[in-house]
Length: 388
Picture 1 (cartoon, helix red, strand yellow):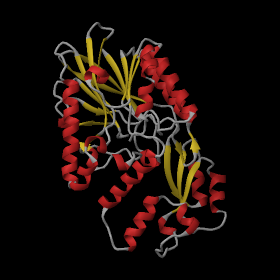
Picture 2 (cartoon, helix red, strand yellow; picture 1 turned 180 degrees about the vertical axis):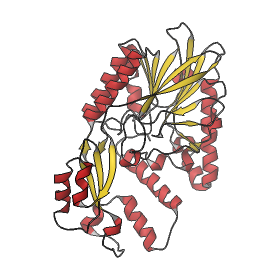
Picture 3 (spheres, one colour; picture 1 turned 90 degrees about the horizontal axis):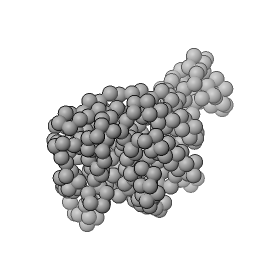
Picture 4 (cartoon, helix red, strand yellow; picture 1 turned 135 degrees about the vertical axis):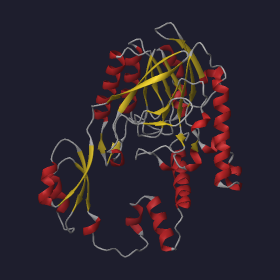
């Protein structure tokens, strides 16, 4: 039997203010085409369907149309919430999704309540899938314990909670079935793709690959945007994002994973490249040299000249696809650190301001900055109704 594993669509994501919904549609159309051509039994979407807990109408329309297009082709569709998705909203759509042959799981649930699903593949063989959407640390570890415990103790508590959940979800795995796990989380020693939300990818959120059962034929993961296989007793794979969401991901190769499995046999995985969507590139040079980089790619440009009035406009005239224009650090004028105030401070990200505050006070501790980022992220997303 065949499955198509994908994740981290981030539909609705903009890049430097540029709307990429047309590209995202092209990518999802390609995924649907691949699923149909390969005659897969199911498409597994391992979280982060959307980039925001409050996606636009256009983003929701695109995702719904994609899932329905797969289901109407006779393909089983299974999708879970990632840390960018609004879990309660996905769960609210479960009755409609179920009627269309689509399984949506927003919040973690017991096996009996839909945390584990079973169906029969086109081959006539049974399939069991344990579903673990993103679990926030505060769900796994009580707030009082976060305050009282050390980071290492908190990590152990998070690890232990996820082990308990997975053990309950996979206890019904059968020797005569293909057993799959789908989850949205960070595995220790995984490589970041470059565009993840760091506050929910740091050490306190990481679990070892040994957390997954050895009798799983395949573990389909989302969250880290780089395609990679993790060292584990069973096949544990991140499909990576099918479209680079930021320039930090420009070196990633976007793919979907074709998984072929049978009872009693470990899964065989084939990467199928995604060709739709514009690529991201970082270029450097003088204004005269930049013309050599003209093309269809979206660009981040480092200008190797001194700053001057009108330089940005001159670069855009040469490279209209430049989404970000900076002065190369080698040519930047030295800046005397000072505490920003007024309008300038309000235009900067709070994490940047906090980093500058720590630097000014002689504090260099990445864990403090990571904690600030996590708390800021949770606070701002709570205000929009996010569950993560």
